[in-house]
Image (cartoon, rainbow, N blue to C red; front, side):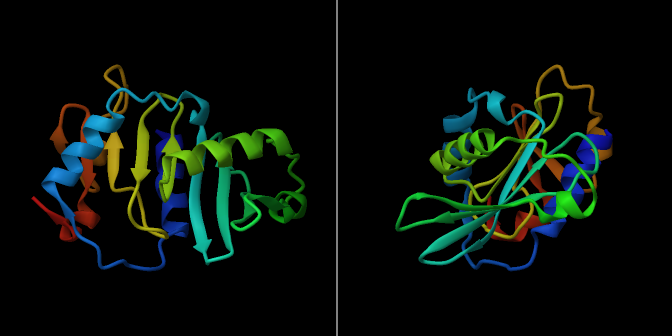
Length: 178
């Protein structure tokens, strides 16, 4: 539960802008079908989101979900198609050792880019938080693992049941045409 609260709080770090795009029920259903069986195992206890995107670069926030640790800011140069900077200043300032190697960071960022999401977080139980549509916004979808010990009642304020193991973030419902 502590990790879930942490994921939700870091999501709000990323919430700055609103996009005008609305999502249809058909888009939601297609998304769920596409990712229903995706395990996201390499992202367990990892949170990644797009912090800023321009034509030439994308800056990602990358964090381990084991407690309250500082984030990495990873700059990806779009024309060069590679990571050009890994900023771990927050770790150094708080005297925290690097918890990812540069190779782990590159692998996580590249896999995240493959999915083309704006946000992806997977907690210790394997619950998946995804925002495929809106940079700088909280997760739109939550996929709960069937064996999750996380109590749905704890999520009632933020997520509502959609179907199967999937929930929608109530704060994003105004963008969804059901």
